[in-house]
Length: 80
Image (cartoon, rainbow, N blue to C red):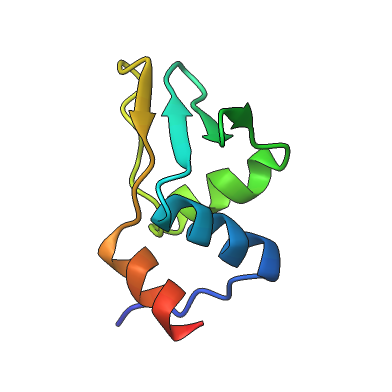
């Protein structure tokens, strides 16, 4: 049975930015989420969205790749 994920207002805003195509991941051992070309100041929110399965896991070998919602992330955004 899937576990319900509670999403804060800040996390919801970041999900909306990913859905709008405004976010990218800069690759590396610790990927960095960029919003409108700038590093996301709240790295813990970005990490939590990936760990909760709401944002696709970035490939650390790719220098710069678009961030994408998972099906669960899209569903969570539309139900919020």
